[in-house]
Length: 49
Image (cartoon, rainbow, N blue to C red; front, side, top):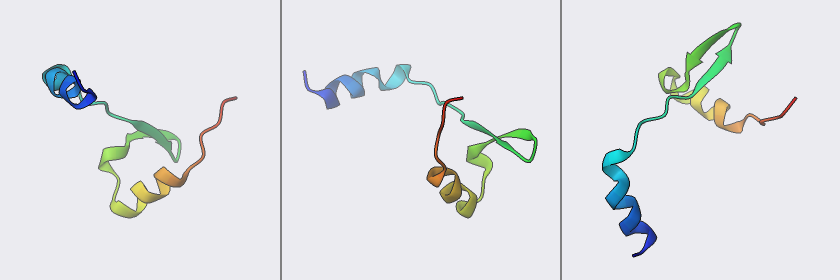
């Protein structure tokens, strides 16, 4: 079975993941950002404390 076939088979079990980020002291879902803010979010560097 190819990778694509496996993904198709499991498609019905998948669940949407909502990503939140901290903006000006509170948390907001990234999907509610405008197009410019989404681009800015993609350019951010992740770090581990």
